[in-house]
Image (cartoon, rainbow, N blue to C red; front, top):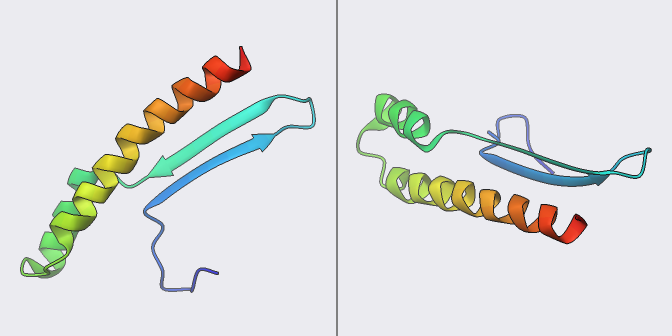
Length: 74
């Protein structure tokens, strides 16, 4: 369970609506915005680039998953 001080970086949800439709929702922090905020906080923080790469990876694969889900459902 997320703690009060945690920050959500990425969320991908697939739901079945009451109308019987599949709803795909996602939200994420933009990698460039994340890097900018982290660099302002602490330019020397060692994991910023790793997190940026993770956000880029998740964003790319979210698009692929959404397309695949639409193909499966249609």
